[in-house]
Length: 172
Image (tube, rainbow, N blue to C red; front, side, top):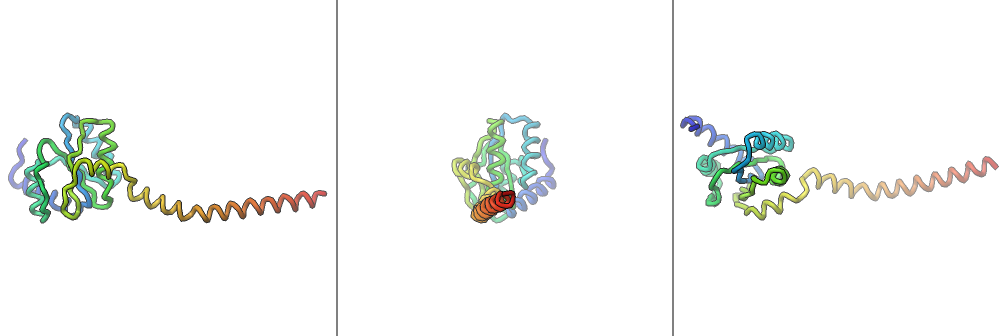
């Protein structure tokens, strides 16, 4: 179904805003994916702050111009979907990579970074296997807490041994 000219301007403005705010916009082919699967992808993506849109490539190119992003658009061919995330650089790649494991019809084309570079599909796949921002923060916190836990465990063990020795002496 063709969009009216006013609707197209609205879509271009919306996509331009998403492109301006997004830290990483992942582009993937979805040819052969069912509508139900795309709806499930959108639902899954919403949970980590990622927005998935299916937009005509011509409108995305106009939105890139409107957003002031000078990016190589030669790879934007075919049926493509765009995953935007303004909070986490890795999240869009991860959500599409996870989804592609059960839906092999999803194929990475590339990504548009916040600093106006077009990443290749291989670079996006490498990003997709990295831990997310929250996972990295949790890892750092765990690393910082491990010495404290070790000291507390050592003190706790020594105190229990001392208390057991005092209890044994008292019962004699």
